[in-house]
Length: 256
Image (cartoon, rainbow, N blue to C red; front, side):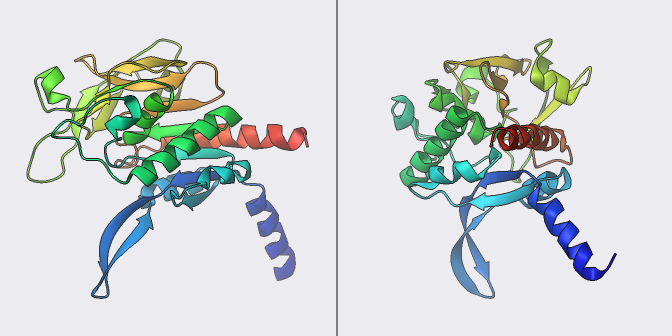
């Protein structure tokens, strides 16, 4: 096979890969001595998704960004700042640290649109909290006041992940993905689910009762996990999202 044929085969293979959008985060950086703000994603999210066989694309959270959903086969909603309490009708706690209201509304529209379209969704940390709010749920704004400890978000001088054994519901999707007798989470969150949103069910909890996993009951694949998937070497959730996105892509192709 010549070089042109190789290039053509590679192009076809790449085109057949499912496309998964990653909600971007913004952060200040200094590059070559210049201060700037950038839209970014954890490289691990990109690498895990690509290694599992998809094409990851970064989605800047701008008004109207939900219109790109028709070009996607799945959506990853990563961790980030606290969800605005205004979105679930609560006053802000002194420890709540929100981001931009524009970003909140854009991401809310993306998640709502993805659910309505039946797109596979993996929502991580803030993403899980936003998924719950989209479905009409509410949040505890500072878990140490509820649990009496800071083990979900250790208050240490350096970034530290808390670790918890997970109690997973028998027969749950998350149980099948992790496939372990004693799964653990590696978390860093000071907020968590209070009232669970409509159409969601808690399928994983920490020993103190804090919800660690929710799944949509009437959806092909919509999972929220409270732990920091992407901050460890565990890529099973990303691989499951890519598998679900591939199935969704093939179903779409079969009907067009």
